[in-house]
Image (cartoon, rainbow, N blue to C red; front, side, top):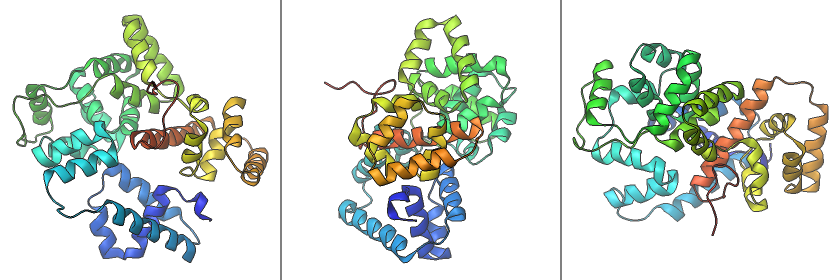
Length: 334
């Protein structure tokens, strides 16, 4: 597998495997559940790891460390800057609160390590506002899976609650933690937790399968057409990749595995395919076209999963400032 086919997750997995079991375990315990799952999957699926692949992964890590590690590690300003640079301002804010202020709770955090079905069973009979708080707290892809396991007639209402949530009052957080039998940890008692909102709802709906997303959007439109339009404006779909500039597409392709790209393009229109081929070398484009032609019929669910994985990578790159997303969900340029 040449370096151009190694994703960032692949490189992280290879690097961890070079550290040895004990050291790798110490690193992994600081990762979140989504990260552990992705890196664990990469470790399990990587085969025939060459010396060159190891060298590339280790060298890239060393370069990043030399560029990013200053003196004075450990102060609050440094932590804030590193997390903001790494995760983007929105994601970093809640994590900074958990690390520096203690605004998180073990109860909520433990939900991120549970499988979606177990979370759905745990919250199914709670008040809809409590369920909306949980959905706002979880990562968008996990929330989408939990939402799909809740009764269909609840989903539209839950997404409206998420979209219109303007933070969470301490009393509501206490109610949730009482439900989970976990006592509140420190934190500023009079401040709202920055959860919910239009973007949160849009991110969750990005990970819901298309038929369910259409039904949920229809329910929201019936109750509040303006709200539905504002959520839709913030959603970024695979089709919106046609509006990303060429440099952004090239950056994205370096992070996407060949197999995922083939699967995603099986269900893409000609505009997207043309955009992708335009930003590949002639040789790489010919190989991709051949793979598309020789790949037999695939399940629609597999195509959608591959497209969602690519959308997730695109969003991460946008939050890191490496690309600018066009279309819905993109930020206007002036």
